[in-house]
Image (tube, rainbow, N blue to C red; front, side, top):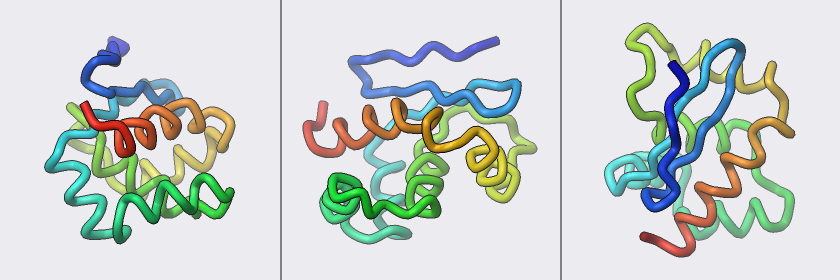
Length: 104
């Protein structure tokens, strides 16, 4: 079943391999991402300059994952993200970065 992203929640859908992952930028998810990656505004600025690292994008996505399969490990997730390519991740990244800047 493909999860449906709800725009008013700032959710994004990310297709990895044969599954879609729902990304929900809740307060708790963003706090966890910030603890790992540093200030979120700085993350947005790096993204705007084209300096966002793949590991930073993977970290943001990892913390925002919602209702992911229990057996999904961060390593498997990161590998699937790299396999899918940056072009497939960019729409979801744009939505999450917009939520960080604009809030709900």
